[in-house]
Amino acid sequence: IISNMPKAGKKPRSAGAVETKAKAPKKSAADPSKKRKKPNTSSYSSYIYKVLKQVHPDTGISKKAMVVMDSFVHDIFERLATEAGRLARYNGKHTITSREIQTSVRLILPGELAKHAVSEGTKAVTKYNSAGEE
Image 1 (cartoon, one colour):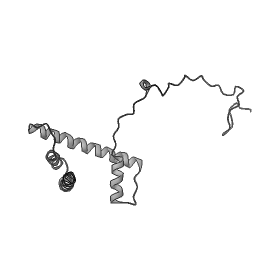
Image 2 (cartoon, helix red, strand yellow; image 1 turned 180 degrees about the vertical axis):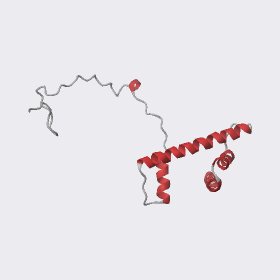
Image 3 (cartoon, helix red, strand yellow; image 1 turned 90 degrees about the horizontal axis):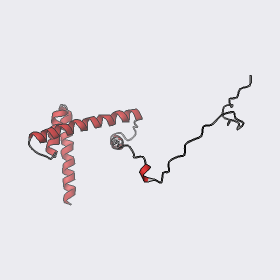
Image 4 (tube, one colour; image 1 turned 120 degrees about the horizontal axis):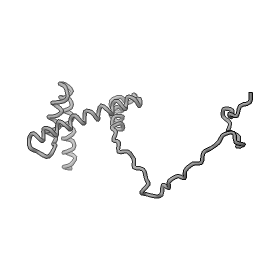
């Protein structure tokens, strides 16, 4: 039996073995009105990786695990921001300050985790303020 299919790893013969369809002309990349805009996706993966290396320098993370961690951080951020906004509105203010963030952390995160988060947040704000004064 003779087959018209090419052998694995070889190109088909040009004697009509495989027909090719005519391709539409490509749009010019030089035309700025036709440029495709990048999707606006934010990710915490680089920051998660940096923190992982600070805590466990010899440990890596898989892509799936990074997606899970990124989703987790997005979720916690969303919860905290929503609660902080709600607190600001209750108090008749238009600005979310570190005080609203701290209160929302205490309300949303459980027990010991909230205490550690508040102390780390306070430390970060103090460091930021002292760096601005210099």
